[in-house]
Length: 446
Image 1: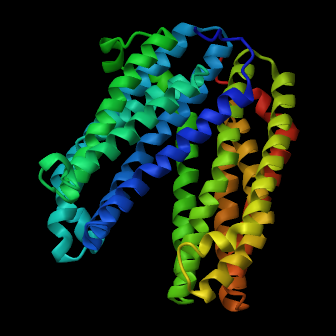
Image 2: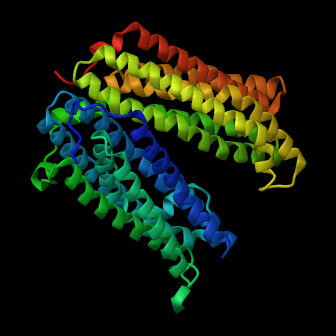
C-alpha cells in the first residue's frame, strides 16, 4: 500500500528498519573480514586496503543520495509527485555517471591506488584482483543508493532493510562456497570474497529496483534517467555537497586525531580501535532516529507545516537523548567485560574502561548533534551545519585533542574528551540555529 504524501509518518516505524539496515551495512565488511581471517591473515590485509578504496567511492556517491532524499521528501510533502519523480530520475542518472567514472578509474588505476596506500608487494596481486572485481559493482551500487534514498523518502524504510539483509545472506553463502570451497568448489581466497560481494550487491540492486517501482509507483523511465534535470540536480547538490563535505571533514579530522594516538603506542591504538567499534554501534541509535526524523520533517516542511516540524524535532531529540543515554549506561557498566572477549591485555581493558565512562557524556552529545543537524538539513538549511562543523572540528576537536591528550598528557581520555566537547559545541550551535527559526525560510519547494 502506498503511503500518501501528507499521511502522518511514525518515527518508530521509520527508525527501527533504519537501525537494522545500517547495522547490516556495518556487518557486510565484518563478515568478509571474519570469514577470510580463517583462511589467511594476508587475505585480511589485502581485503582491508581494498575496502578503504571502495568505501571512499561510496562516500563519493552518498552526497547525491543524501540530497535527493531531502528534496524528494519536501516534494512529497507538497503533494508534487511529478517533481519527486524528476528528482529520482536525475539523481539516478547523475550517480550512474559518477559510478561509471569511479569503476573505470578503479579498473585502470588499481595498481597505482594500492601503491599509494603502501600495500606490501607480496599482497599486491590479491589486493588488485579484489579491487578490480569489486569495482565492477560500483555502477549499480551508485544507482542503488539513490533508489534506497527514494524508498526511504516515501516512508518505505522496511523494504530497503530487507534488501540489505538479502545482500548479506547472499554474500555469506557465496563465501562458504567460494572461500571455503563447499560442495567441491575451488577455494578462491580473496577473489572468492570479491565475487560473493559483487553477486550479493547485484542481486540486491535488482530486488531494490523491483520493490522501488512496486511501492513508490514511480516507473524507471530510462530516457528521463539519461537526461538529468539540471534544476533538480542543483537542489540536490544544495543539500548533498555540504553534507558530504561535513562527512569528509570528520574523516580527515579523525585521521589526524588517530595520528596523535599513534604517538602513545600500540596499546593506545588498539584500545581506541576497540572503543571506536563499540561507539559505532551506539551511534546507530542516534543516526537512525536522526534519519527517520529527517524524513518526517522533510514531508512537513514541503507541506508548509512548520509548527508541526518544530514540535517533531524536539520530540525526536528527547527520544534520541533518552535512548542513547540508556545504551551508553549499559556500555559503561558492561563494556569492559565485552572488551575482555577480544583481548586479555589488562592495560587495554583499563584504557577502554576509562573511555566507557566518558561515553556517558560523549554519545548523548553526538546524538544531540545528529538529530538537530538532520532536522536542519531536512528543512533545506545545509550550509550552516557544514561551516559550523568545519570550525568546531578543526578549531576545537583537533587542537583540543592535541592539547589535552599530548601536551597535558591525559592520553586517550584527553583526546576523546576533546572529541566529546566538539560534539556538544556543534549540537548546541545547531539547536541555536533551529531556535532562531531561520530554517523556516530555506524550503526547496516553491
